[in-house]
Length: 398
Image (tube, rainbow, N blue to C red):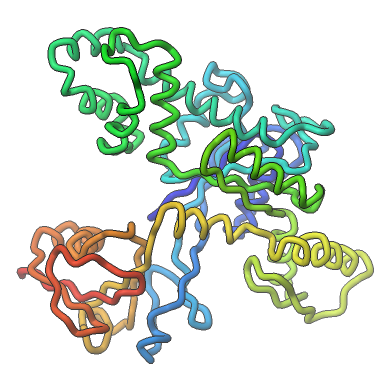
């Protein structure tokens, strides 16, 4: 399952963001370090379910289907807030940097209103761009520290055989799941030939490139209703100059959580991260005023609360994932228990039929013979490149 780390400094709305997407109650308060341990929950990526095209009724097992929309689960990790100097043990220290290793991608929550300082305390006119750059700096220093530790011994080995540099680095950061391809790409950006001559700046550059190549990051400009929309556009423009390719999505976690809770209480109909809602019950004056504020300041201004957009943009666009459905019967589209389109998987674009077999089960990959594209009824080989929405039967040795 794809894992997304929800990161940022304290008191920017990370736990509210997490609760709104997972509908799990976690401690939420306007003071630093509300989250001590990483909260873990499930959010969803939406895709049009294959049952609509196939004209059958699905029986989902590993996901959900609502009105023709398949909800594909992704794991969300709400990491406690980071403060400047965290890599040196400040704030709540390295534990939370260590939590980052679990994630495949990051959504950094920043306070777009500029009303909280680096440590999450109330202030005025704090620049959100500073939060983006400081957090990346903390992550880079932490990873650079891991790379630098004991490097002199490795450098001596590499003086004899420099071709093993990628192998040595891969072993050193094995717990982070950074591929050798990413390591080699990052190494190409270093201009220092001898490993023994690497400076602190070289380690920091390598660390930064490794993060960029292995962990997509999206910025959620939270509390968007408390600032001028033009300032969020300026944040994206200035952020892209500081960090090429930076993506910024305006969000209001508080608005989404309020709408989700109102829906659960039966007060309104509301589609997750929709652009509007409809009332089902009469409201008090206070409730009506609050919902009117959300409609005008968030939904009308930004189109949605932005939370669902964050997940789907990072998974479907930045991570380039597609949805495929493995089945056991190519005609009925069901499994051995006659569940129709029971499972849906998010896989990297470019994955093959054999890759899917291994995702379903290692033995299925090892015993792979061929596959069948159930929509076209065409037999395909192990190197068949999967397309979004494919329904695939894997044929394997018994």
